[in-house]
Amino acid sequence: MSLLELRDLDARYGEEQVLHGVSLTVEHGELVALEGEEGAGKTTLLRAVCGVVRTHGTVLLEGERVVPHTPEHLAREGVAHIPEDRGTFAPLSVLDNLRVGGWVRGGASARDLAHVYELYPELYELRTARAGGLPDAEQELLALGRAVMAHPRLVLVDAPSPGLHPRLRELNERGTAILAASRSDAVPGARRVVLEAGTLRATA
Amino acid sequence: MSVSLTNAVAAGLAAGTVYGLLALGIVLVHRASGVVNLAQGAFATLSAFVCSSLVVHGWAFWPALGAAVVLSFAGGAVVHRLLVRPLEDGPLVAATLLTAGLLLAADGLAAWIWGYGIRPSRRPLADGTASILGLQLARRDLGVLVVGLGAALVLGLVLRRSRIGLGLRAAAANPVAARYSGVHVGSYTTVAWGLAAAIGALAGILAAPLFGLRPGMLHLGLLYALAAAALAGLDSAVLAVPAGLALGLGLELLGRHVHVLHGGLRPAAGLAVLAAALLVRRP
Picture 1 (cartoon, rainbow over the protein chains, first blue to last red):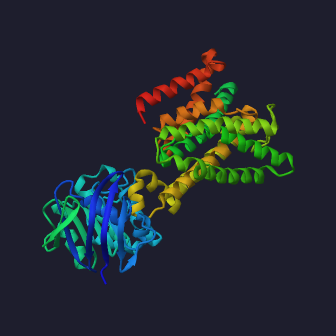
Picture 2 (tube, rainbow over the protein chains, first blue to last red; picture 1 turned 90 degrees about the vertical axis):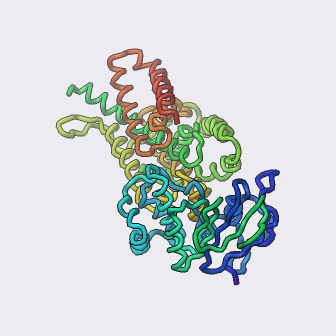
């Protein structure tokens, strides 16, 4: 049974339909690169999985329909989303950002924090810094650290920089499934799927 | 320090505590939902009336204060859920206009129930003076300072240290990302409205013996609280109370030297601070 399955998924912003009948599966522990040009619908597809855009179709997690189809529920079901803007809580410290990451586990345990600091020692050095003041690369790493705090089964990541690819592969090798959307520069070793104008055209 | 100057400083800080607590409520609501709650002062006055009525009906002061604060939390949460939340998807001006209506409605309700006259109100500390570091301070002002600043400190610790505080700060900082992390942003916005009403209730109860409990008691207090909130950029809970204290103290001390500021032109000074803060901080 697939970890994530999308069946005939449509998504729209108001009157504008962006996704047209997209069907896609992500298996347990799989690394999938979702490619496509600007405006192809990659970001919308990730947002549609999380239920923040109006969708029609079916989203299944381990064969179960996702109800309610909200980001809060998906987070509790082990789906972490790293949006293109990295979702940084700018006024909060790096440590507090990580604590928010552990929200669905009832709070950030010392063990989970130690695990993230072991994976990403840079975050330990920056733990008291204001997150909004970090350079882009470190905000991206913080977003990944926040995702790891939730012990996700699946990480959706929008437009990861090439610098993040080794970290994503490392996380994937530990058993976490990853669906990474990018215009080009797919994460090495990923199964590639291509979106064109909101339709899944081909897989490679 | 002369006795009159000591009294002026204490009175200014006591009034500033009230402005600061109201400003703190305004900041909490603005951070959580983007709305400037113009009814913050009227809610506070209503809560002071509730506390006063409980005392008149035989309750001791502190349980009455606690009950009024808890009821206000619930009232603020209900107002958000029933009236404000349905407007949150639209332009912010709609919810702000609603709070202007709530201000008038709350004052009207208070007048309908309790009348327009000044009602009796209790102070946290009995009358008299207390000697601190050789200074003779009015216990009336001291009580407001201790209770008000103590409550602000406790609220600050809750925001800084607790899970509820983390949820509130995350929801305010980046609501979309907070939802991706599993935080129920709508619920935390409701909590923010409840907390703002509760801290406002305390401000109203502390203000009652200073300003005289009557409908509209905090209309001018709202102006100074808005000025303090604007000085805090409408988003800094840490700066809101110090800004209120500075404003209360500044107005009181200026009033000693610029006599027109001791009376009718004091609101104009508050307005000038509000306008300047909005121009400089541009929240």
